Length: 221
Ligand code: Z5A
Image: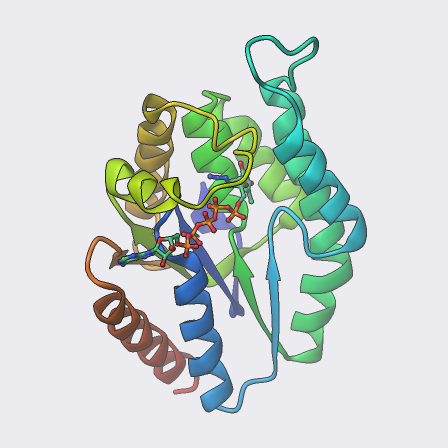
């Protein structure tokens, strides 16, 4: 499915469940790329442009509580993350790649397969179709920060604040998300590097650094 879409070597994405340590990994990848002299755009999904950030707020802060008058339907959620992505790809990612810059993105299309496909149970072929029509390419490298659901959730529990629409979901949802990521990795093992995110942060940082430097060496060969 994925293998028919071209890769964009200068696009690196980070994926993972809650509490996987994406913030630390993002800073690590950014540092590696900058140390190698790469001109870099750092972005995130959903979001990355003013309009896409508005869509992000609508998706994450919509009421999915049981007592809400109107819930965001899973297919509406999928279309909204892809609407945000369409904007982000057109306004930020494509122009940066065309300039020859690097793009580092905190989450990308794999999150839609994991959350809306795995978590919400929407058909994977819908998502693949949207990916093909709206995006048309896959990253050159995707780091999957793999952490067991219970450990990841325990890390973010003390964070405070009002949980968003996805954070309010139950463990079973996050187990399906995890399985969704694992299926993506299994389907495209050359693009993904699995990072063990259950280890102490310094160890995770070392693993991320190794993976990015190996990738840079391969791309620049
Ligand atoms: N979403 C979607 O549904 N469909 C889509 O297509 C896309 C996204 C693109 C927002 O993403 C939501 O959007 C996300 C999926 C959905 N929902 N969820 N859940 P986000 O990336 O903005 O939100 P997030 O996943 O909740 O990010 P996060 O909580 O910031 O995760 P994190 O970056 O992995 O967590 P962290 O801040 O780096 O770490 C959390 C804490 O754990 C922190 O105190 C760390 O110090 C600690 N930590 C992390 N790693 C370690 C290790 N190794 N040891 C010890 N402590 C650690």
